[in-house]
Length: 361
Ligand SMILES: C[S@@+](CC[C@H](N)C(=O)[O-])C[C@H]1O[C@@H](n2cnc3c(N)ncnc32)[C@H](O)[C@@H]1O
Image (cartoon, helix red, strand yellow):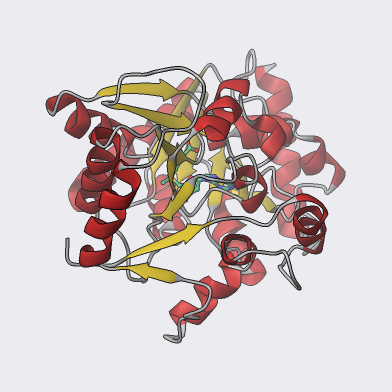
């Protein structure tokens, strides 16, 4: 493996740790390197984007030191209480971000793990459930930044699990919904490794439910499409055309993952292919988390409003008449989470949307 891995190990404990959490960043004695890395992740992200990595916050593990580390952990007794098959990896979904949406199984495995590999979407609050002796390896992929290849992640999982450790691979949402969990499953199974998956609440259902948007609703939407916003040429255009027709004629709710950058193109394609420009929609940044932001708007103005609000990743987009059922849509008259009032044109569109909704009920 040519690239280096960022490894963060050890944690602050007790009161120091809680106080660090309350402050949202690490200050003072007792707050370890790992916590600092976790709580300052967004700042790290910005620093790295500017090309000046904070060397103290990130311990780099080069291929040579990775080998050395593996040799060292091989000799260590495993944590947890029961003997287990050494060739086992747990793929664990952590839900959309609110730690209270974790499953009991996810928490148990985080407490038992010897090694945890985690993604960018896993919040610091969730990582707090990982036991203190666990080795934590950040393998997030970040757009436009130096990222870990999927091949590197596969190899790490394989190397750690064959060294007899309890390996937990944490993934945001559900591991098998746009999470590349299926690729990890295939790679490991081909090499004789057992993979056990703990399902997580996927962003679509966690976020829409928490906003009071039923993904299906009698008479309004009887099916849901989860699609990726990563555009792939003709295939995507054809798919969008098909989708637009479905939404128009079959009462479909469309949920777009990873659609922030392609939102202008996607909404244009959807409208060009028959989707009503007045269809209610919402973009949700960091859904279910304390710093969640939302932009509610008719499809035709969503992209502009999202740009004005400067929403960032992770953002989920939900398009469909079910969005008008949200108390937020109704409370804000179809505009947004208080960032911008609706325009007269939008209010008119919204009125039309409501009428359509009443008609189909
Ligand atoms: C690589 S996909 C992972 C999806 C994940 N496996 C799931 O089941 O939710 C990442 C995308 O999921 C969406 N997403 C995940 N968590 C989110 C959150 N808390 N708020 C908004 N969008 C989220 C965003 O569209 C983001 O770009």
